[in-house]
Length: 128
Image 1 (cartoon, one colour):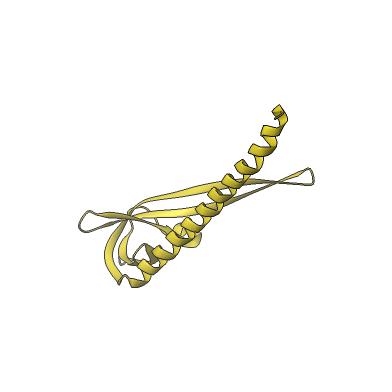
Image 2 (cartoon, rainbow, N blue to C red):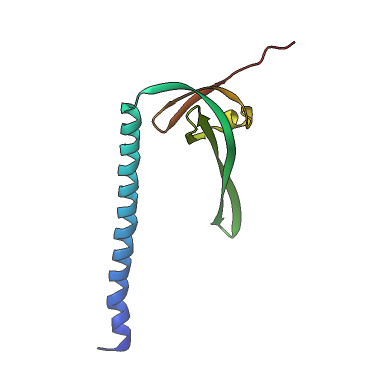
């Protein structure tokens, strides 16, 4: 066996292992997503008093290389943490438009189903 022969034997095996790991990860994540969706569907729809405690955003940047050009894009994911009368807190992923309308300290009625945010109706103080 020549030294180069080991490389030709090892490379296809290594590529096969990486392929199995990537496909396995995709399948596991899909199963988790379907499981969470099913759990949310089976959960009761609740509307409870809550206060907006914190807001945060997560910006994910991507650079695509195509024909010697670099294309940059980003996606922003928005999160809000609500606190219930019991002192418990829960964070929900929400849309950018909802995120922009909420402020820390807002109080109102939070509607959710499992881990799915459905809406927040702010308490308005009457004007004097």
